[in-house]
Amino acid sequence: MTLDEIKSLVRTVADFPKEGILFRDITPILRDPVALRAVVDHLVNYCRDERVDVVVGIESRGFMFGVPLSLALGAGFVPVRKLGKLPSEVVQAEYALEYGTNTVEMHRDAIRPGDRVVIVDDLIATGGTAGAAVDLVEQLGGEIISLLFVIELAALQGRESLQGYAVHSLITY
Picture (tube, rainbow, N blue to C red):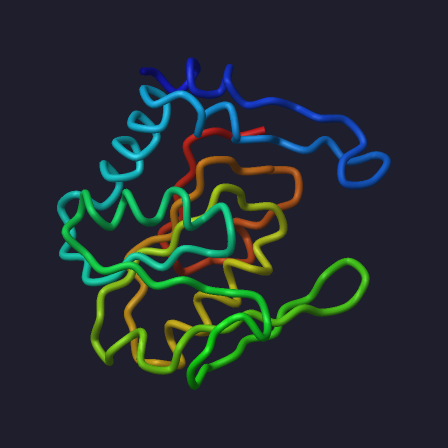
């Protein structure tokens, strides 16, 4: 399945979650097993030749792509969760939002020093959450191989906030 065919499955929902926002909904991709497999295959192509120890998925839609990606790469999977969702000792990273800040967490024992890590999420907008995930991995001594996204909202310039890292997206709006 081509990237144009995958893009045609992304549903645009106006005024969600608030007025003026065009929400890019990936649930039609998840519903279509051929499209879902194609997305994972395209993501794998960005890091197939790298030794990847861990795939880090950002809550929550990053989990949906991160787990099959980790299986395809023969790597472990680690979730990055919102504040207060993990049961064991954590590291935290705060990031800026339009209206304040938010915090994400990862288990302290999730990444070992020297682990080669790929971070995945469904979408990059401003890059705040992805940058926080990078911070978590680096706090624990991991090495970022690349950051992978299904969708990039280019006008919000999230890629610029991740300079110095390999950033790849399948679909750009």
